[in-house]
Length: 166
Image (cartoon, rainbow, N blue to C red; front, side):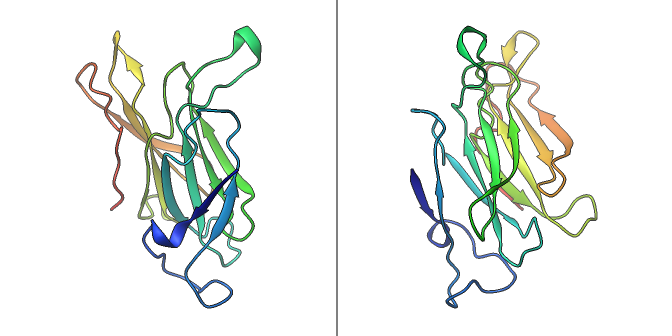
């Protein structure tokens, strides 16, 4: 089990204060396997489920998916957790071996006009035209929709290893 204290490492979100009057959220996020690098990226996502508590995203870029010999390795994931109780509200997974989805994530202002901020998710291991180009995707933590993406025109540069919110 990994415990995160978010007030120390993330910008304080706008909105209601948490119980106790402090801007701090404790959550235990359990890695699903050894060496999956859960917690490599963290981001506030606003109040995704409208419960009055700011929710947060956690990346795990080395997560494997699937049973036995049919498994995909290092596809990665990003999960949005409730700031109230730590429950998983939303999850995205990489699609191919070594995608490393979740190496980076960042909150960006509302793009689709629903009044909730969006997330950029880094997929630095994304492959296109025979090489690793890297890609970021823009997603709605509220609906789960993939809203857009961007890739590097270069090869073997692992674009989107680091992202920064606006």
